[in-house]
Length: 80
Image (cartoon, rainbow, N blue to C red; front, side):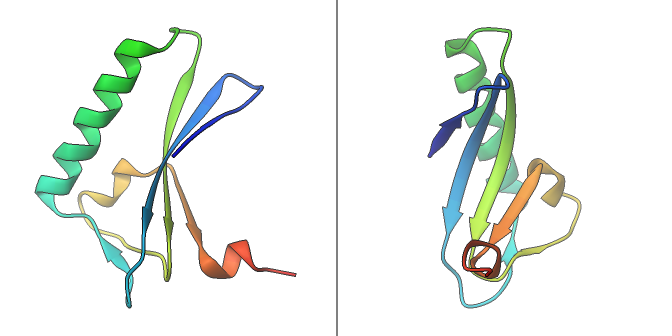
């Protein structure tokens, strides 16, 4: 999902439903970089792209988790 914001930022959202925290593998990291590259070619250079993960329970931090600028969990979405 792409969210184009008025401040020239595009959130490129990955939405994952898991029973535990999401772990970014080396292969998935390269997939994300490839998607970022493809999107960068199609948009104006004035935009910045933020990879955003929307997932059930969050992200397990490892050497590949830096692919995501933002992490949104179900608790964040349904917070009062």
